[in-house]
Length: 451
Image (tube, rainbow, N blue to C red; front, side, top):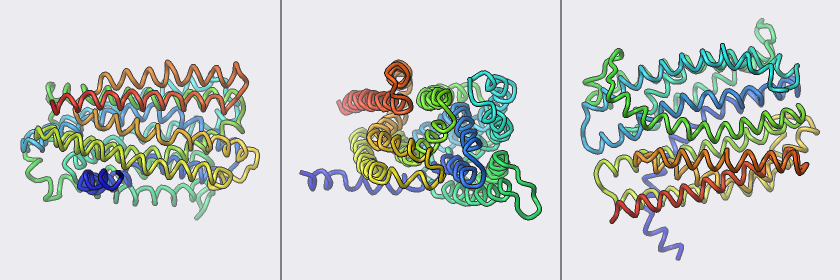
């Protein structure tokens, strides 16, 4: 049975992995930045500052995914136009996307600087944690602008199937981020120790350099010459802007509903205590690594689906999508085993505080169980995005995380006294719900296309 399935989908496994692996490398960049922050702060400062990283990352990711979601709006459009060999349109879409993303970056910075930094005092968090969190969050908020410029050119290149370059930029950028983070946090080479703010500054520098390099690559490479004939940095077209936003805004909401559920969970856990919040940060950092790998596979699925959709090649579209499901199920099964088997060892990557490690180890077991659901739900979103189907999936994510996940987590955590574990049980149920409903949506849409 398995040999027949493998033979049927083998060409699609190869195509998808060839496209997905570089995307995985660049997608991991977003998570590795925050993972590196946690490791550096966890080893060179204290538990209170690690809890500040948890609080900030929970809030910041909620803001950041709005920008990331908008930036993803161009990818399926580029893939579809490339499939139709409508190259001139690609340059106009890039111009419009660049202006949109710069504006969104500025708006999100203003939102954080004049909104979130005032609200953070009223979230019932430990005062010492809030004191460290504020300057760190301010630096991260500035970094949104260069990050979205990087995303503009990255998503354009990936939509055309050029995925390796963004991976290399992310690898070099994140390596620099780690080096600078250690220097700034610990205080080396005559630089005074900056504590948790040091990783915020290193992230800002990293993202400015990544945006610069990615922009130069796309604008100067011969690979994109025929696509950039109509590119102008100051050009924006209302009709094209609406097309990008009609996809990007729902995608931003999809990510926001999921990330805000985990952010909401972090805030709830913060009301329990700093140790529990630090443990949550460790477990969620490790789970986020596997999620971003799954997200890379999902991005490849978006590109392949969009390209096949543009060519009206619906049989290949469905087979390629199913192959993406197979790949992610296999990968997430492996990570589930690792999380469960090594739950007592993995937290030592970030901290040596035994009280924190004890709680984090319990959360990693729960994370192991939700790996399959997390992987399949993000691939489902990716495939549907390639079809331009974003509105119903957005409603599904809202239902899964905010009607089911967080309320159940609150009841189990506080009403039934299960604490941190109870909140994570609720999140797991939310992921399961999203996974099932998105797969049913995928089946309905692709079977209809194949008539």
